[in-house]
Image 1: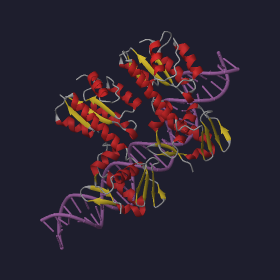
Image 2 (image 1 turned 45 degrees about the vertical axis):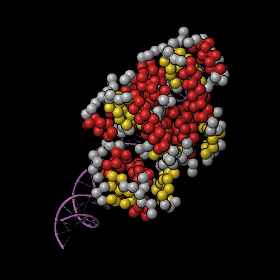
Image 3 (image 1 turned 60 degrees about the vertical axis):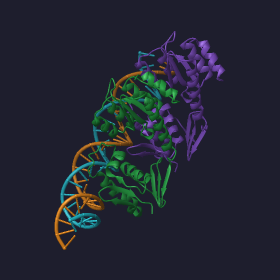
Image 4 (image 1 turned 30 degrees about the vertical axis):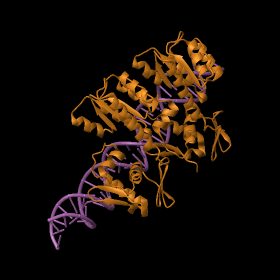
Length: 215
Length: 215
DNA sequence: CGGTGTCGTCACGCGTTCGCCACGCTCGTT
DNA sequence: AACGAGCGTGGCGAACGCGTGACGACACCG
């Protein structure tokens, strides 16, 4: 499957497409265009696909593109590593053009669906979170949070009432690059203390993780 | 594809078009007309297209035109260099007239969308910013700012109270063509000093970036 | 060709943050 | 009731992130 064919097929399906022939060029293009979706092969002329994942995830965390990987590799380890690197979808060769187009469309829909309900201001009882200003207030009085504390609280608040495993929290807040020891616990501790009366709203789910309840 | 054809097609699509037959003439024309978009070939009779990019970007940074490049070059390095030089869109020959017209329309839309909420005079507490005159005043007395300082302050002021990541600021003020080292920090430092009492309104958000607060 | 101003980079130093550890308590299971 | 795994907590040191001053490259102007 040639790149040109893919471009043609996706353009034909109504997508706006740009393409590059190497990893470096792709990164530069992604930086310039801020695309919704980046589609690429695991084997690139100049770099590993997973490196590309990390590079794309790193840049401009606010509007991170969805990552879509094509690969000839049948080995599952690669597949696993890809998802751990933040890949959103994954197709193993030989793949039909039709399948790729359909999946891209699905990803695209998912993105616009996920974008809509993104609110600037999150309110949960006495807790108010302004994600743009990165400010948090409990019962009106503002609370100073550090980066990790804020990100963690945001994760919990976004999925309030649902349990978040430690691993999930680590990968979302820390970005997979910690030894996943007991960092989460410590951060939760500090968070609880700073949140004062609201601190007890962060519930421990023994053996699993944490959740934020909205009394 | 001849220049005359392009002019005809773009005019037909409702755009106001002027054209020149060399790089130097183009620069002069752009200076005189302050166009929204400049479209040109990478190979010009008298100069390199990238030089033209730089020349166009340099002149009148307040209303910088969007740059749209046509090129016969298939080598990706050129494409990369083009984006680094601040090109907004890029089409490789052979290009269909239709595609060029569509892209110009997209660029045009993007521009007017970005322009719509533009106010001439921004006032935030004791801070007054005149974007057209590129002049800033604190408590009535005017402050001399350099290009970078002004652009940075403008970015912060436009999204006052919202945290701007360093990456976002770099890409908007510097246009991605810096090593994104600690330029932002240094510029903020100089800005704070010049802003005097208002300097402390630029808050550091540790691990993220900066925001301008409006007391 | 020297003078001036802007801007990017670097190195240094300080304060904050954060990850880790160890100890002791709590909860769930048998 | 007893035991062990899981978790809260306090404290500590290292690393990080940022402010700052200085320097040099570069463009512009006289």
